[in-house]
Length: 228
Image 1 (tube, rainbow, N blue to C red):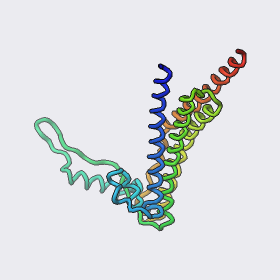
Image 2 (image 1 turned 90 degrees about the vertical axis):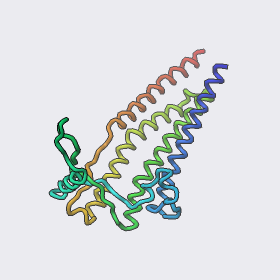
Image 3 (image 1 turned 120 degrees about the horizontal axis):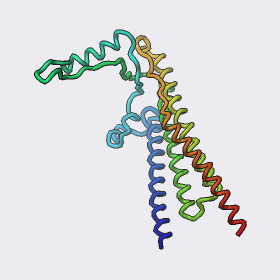
Image 4 (image 1 turned 90 degrees about the horizontal axis):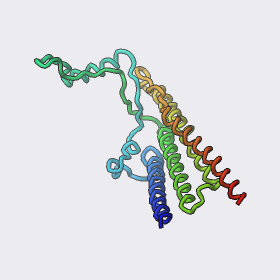
């Protein structure tokens, strides 16, 4: 009875993983078929409701505004909100600082497609990760959790996270740098600096380590079963 309940719980989690894989794949498909891809689906009718507004709009990138223009942006924003004022309770208000902004890029269809691709492909990778998780849970549910294919899938998930995440970030930054440097905005702006999330890389390496440990445990289990 206990085993049946446990396997049912694993089955529920497996269905959830499959649902997340389907959502990620659908999101990638939205990018591919939307205005920045093949433009065959009018996503603007659905985008805001399904948080796919980025897939609906023009390509844009975060930039650092150089020189005096960057300072003027913050100064103008501070002036709009009124800046600071002295009161009986001390100085109150708010000020803006920094030189970061966003620029909308009106580029050729080929460049627009590339901008879309570096966002859609990582989503396919995420869908693949959830698919592997679902397959692992299916093996566990069938009592086959120590099979060699489970070890390989765990290590594959870790590798996808550890390597795929920084590669996706680098690809998006490289495309952003290329688009911004080739636009009229390049006179006063550069693409935002590359920022790789090392915590995600570390998490991927931990998953790889778990996969290797799982491999050793599974090997010991098979050896013990061979002695019985």
